[in-house]
Image (cartoon, rainbow, N blue to C red):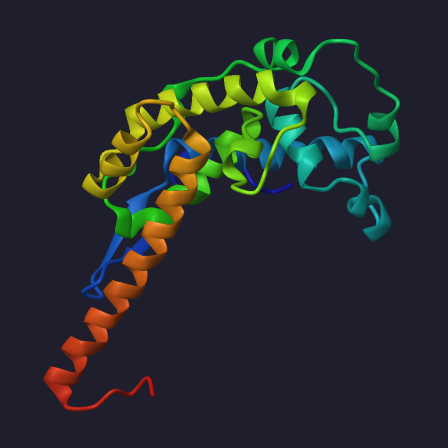
Length: 220
């Protein structure tokens, strides 16, 4: 690949606020980490294929779950679903989680303003999945009896992350509602719901201001 991973840290993106002002910002550390892993992941796959771009059929075997597994353990080579299926374990789900990849709370991005939820969510979700916390982000997930202990550990760990990263007043209010039980699954679900309502309210406000200024709504 032509991408030099050492230059990814210098990449920037444009963010537009509610007043349509555009600001150029550097990538978050979490974004940089995911992009570097992605580039290296593709390089490994190409190397495994005799330094040739794999066919479409080969690429289909390397889906999102395998990339997340590679992020958790970059020293391993990506494996196909068939190879993964042959790996057996006798460890309990909770012990597997405890012994899993090294998790670093300091890498998680802070949510300082709920209007920036979408960009925050992208980086946050990528790290959460890498840290084997994807089930907590799924509000419909209910663990089996065998997985309850592991799921509780996952929720506890993510709750600790939330206490360090949720800086927005609305997000803090949600956090306080679940301080008694540390249910990070419900915190994430409520945060998502609030963010969507906030986004709709911001759009409505913009359209109203436009109407007062111009006397018309070009969007309709």
